[in-house]
Structure formats: structure tokens, C-alpha cells
Amino acid sequence: MPRGGKREGAGRPFGSTSVHKEDSLSVQVAVRLTEGEKKRLEELASQSGLTVSKYIHKILEEHF
Image 1 (tube, one colour):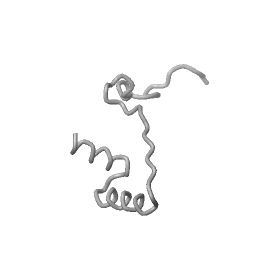
Image 2 (cartoon, helix red, strand yellow):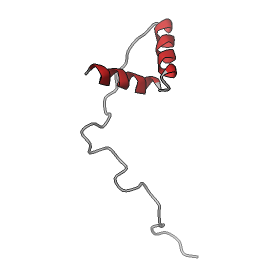
Image 3 (cartoon, rainbow, N blue to C red):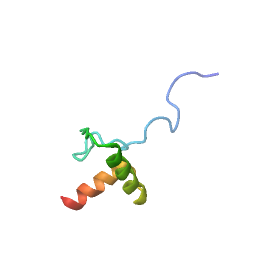
Image 4 (cartoon, rainbow, N blue to C red):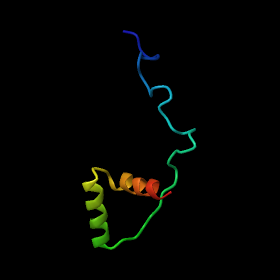
């Protein structure tokens, strides 16, 4: 039984990484909220069918 070597179709697909893209997400921002504010943010994101992170991205795109 042969061992080792490259398996056909194994590994990450070519071009699937955004490491070299200018718009890659590389910065994290922390914001302190009250429990009520956090709950409201989660509700708004949920109503939009988005995660909190994607909801914030959407808001930023609309304003910039």
C-alpha cells in the first residue's frame, strides 16, 4: 500500500485566501456596551438576517 505524497484534490483551493487583498479583515475593534445595548444590537442584526459583525459592516458601508 503506497504511503505519503500528494492526494488529488487535497488542500486549500487555489486563490481561496484573501491574505494579499487590500480589503482583508485584519483589525479587531472592541466596544463596551450595556447589556441592553448589546441585546438591541443583536436584535437588529437578527432582524436583518445577519450576524452582529456583518450587521456592523453593513451599517458602515451605508455611512461611508
